[in-house]
Length: 158
Image 1 (cartoon, rainbow, N blue to C red):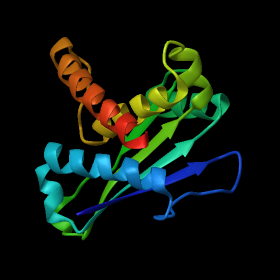
Image 2 (tube, helix red, strand yellow; image 1 turned 30 degrees about the horizontal axis):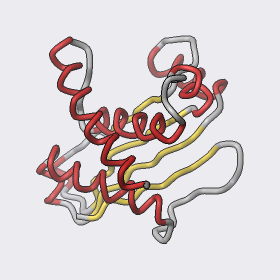
Image 3 (spheres, rainbow, N blue to C red; image 1 turned 180 degrees about the horizontal axis):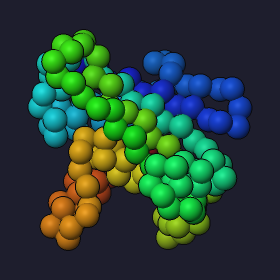
Image 4 (cartoon, one colour; image 1 turned 90 degrees about the horizontal axis):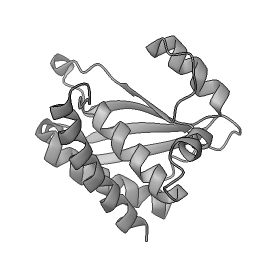
């Protein structure tokens, strides 16, 4: 199974789905390995896809209000795709991640920007796989896994 990432930005027209970009390939490689470990059913697919979009605070505030009924900007939102296993598709569409770098910096001043972005990707990736942090037990599990993925992403990007 091969995982593809597309990086998009709403401030310009540059979309990075280019498989020759070394950083995108490194991130995809880490997430692909984690996907196979955390979601064994992924091995039934030839390909998996995640879209990551970078937005401004105003845009993420609108999304946060529309989808979570929270009228404020946030650092990251995850939009998992509804999986219908009966469709028997060769591509596992995991969903979309929306990151607001300005809010990431504001909400996580203790982290340098690369570490913060890796944390956002790890966190939202787990949401795409169905993890949540609505109870202390679930939060502990998710945070442990997320920190491991964040560290692997950081190591891959060195």
